[in-house]
Length: 257
Image (cartoon, rainbow, N blue to C red; front, side, top):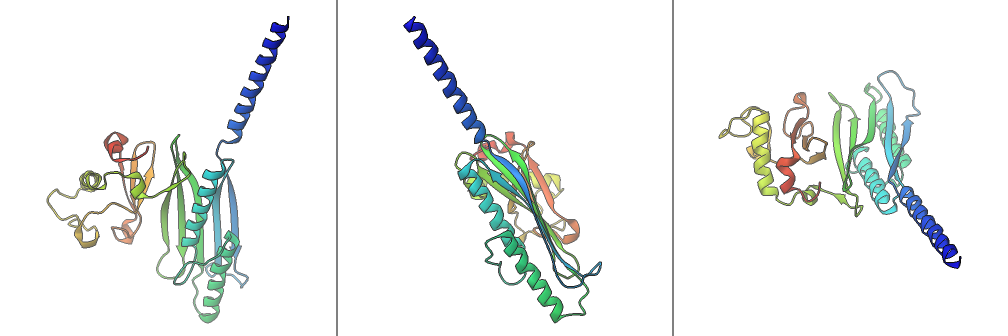
């Protein structure tokens, strides 16, 4: 009888431990919620003359090291985008970033009251790719502070989910030299740049007429996306350039997938 009671007690303890581990695991699943921030000038606005900022960001939750890395990277990226002047604001919150931008608009408008164009800054983030090892966020932004047109661009925020580390191009490519050779071949094929001809022979604008990898990479379900933002290698009217290379062809060049 004592053996039976002991067995039951052990079984219940084991079941309880398993439940606790399951609950602990579930509690540590990375989750996101969207935080929305918005600010507008206090000066009188017309349809075309106003200063506005809208920032929609993801806030990571539940996995402290990874979440902290993600949230800090998103914030620092937004701060590097939403500003006017020679350098970004040193604001410590999204509210301070917006306040600085609107203050710059107000000062400029008061200095040049006949200037009819308004200012606009928008930022939006979303999860673009999420695997066991990699999390890739896409940050889209639009900035207009006068001139012929504004600028829209995409930033790629890549994280190693096992360490929480933010990854740059040098961290995800282990053989840049040979990957660049492959990428140029694929690029020429897609954008019909004849082999043997200068890379800019069809109107592109690579510096010194030499093919270069883009500043921005995205992990996607179809492969690694090479993303050239507007102005990076072509005129504004042509917009961004995109090239997806299947993982089967790039896997040997990647440190993690």
